[in-house]
Amino acid sequence: MSSPKRRYTDDEVEQQTIERLNDPNAWEAPIYVPPLTVPRPAWVTAGAHLELAARHYLVSVFHRLGAEANVTSVHPAGVDITVVLPSGQALTIDVKTLSRTDKWPIGPFATRPYHYVAFVVFSQPAHPEIAPQIHLVRSDDLRVLTSRQKGDVLPVKLLGKKRKLSSVWEELLRETAA
Image 1: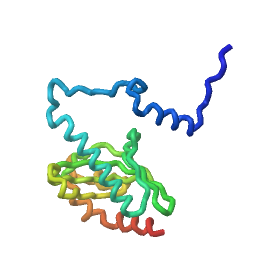
Image 2 (image 1 turned 30 degrees about the vertical axis):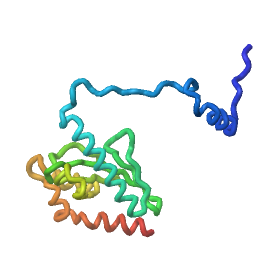
Image 3 (image 1 turned 180 degrees about the vertical axis):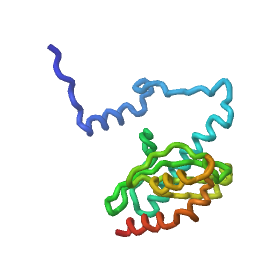
Image 4 (image 1 turned 90 degrees about the vertical axis):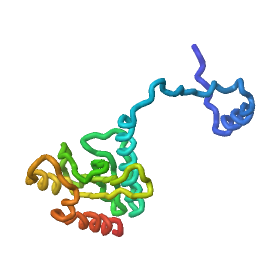
């Protein structure tokens, strides 16, 4: 019968680490990732990087408003960001990233209470000093608007005019002040 493994205290682990710090034989070889033999075309990574930038930009806006916001690691049912307002109200957000256009090819999105769709529009994605525009709309309002939309493209500029988009941010600002 084998004896159970000894559990080291935090102090013991720290002491062993410091003792081995300058001993190259105590450590594994560093990981090396070789460069690709064939460069990836820019279009392969540009979209993924821009989507990630859009999510994190939106999270930064919510943090500036005093909310706890996080990018989800898995995107179930159109949830890219979760937000908890200071009032305790939880929201979910589906982020749609647009590059060099403000026209969204209408695609699938979830509709449910406290779920929003954010359109992050990068007019010039290669210029980081130009902040993207954010258009935030309730998912149920967007469902009504898209059902009435003629064609399969929605200019996001119309969201503010038709659905009083600014009222969504104003409402969220009131929530953060609560």
